[in-house]
Length: 99
Image (cartoon, rainbow, N blue to C red; front, side, top):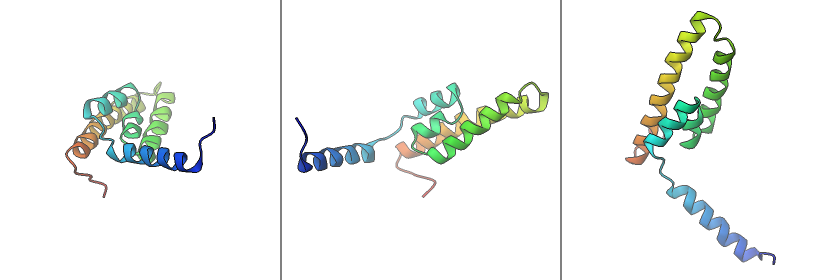
């Protein structure tokens, strides 16, 4: 009924191996960022940048009744999609620009 220590260690090793083998799909990263800025970055494993984009998008949405933030949000949203797609594509090719 309960897992012993050896089984837990084996399960942990399997999870770590699966996480290391994860290769994000560029189209999926772009789609997630199109749904809401930051989600594609989080899908790529970049939680810091994803969280920042998520909060920034939220602030821009709240202030979107002003004309300038609306234009800034549209430019930011398009950049966000491009960045998530490009990062996943470079990750897929084995090139990680942040390292």
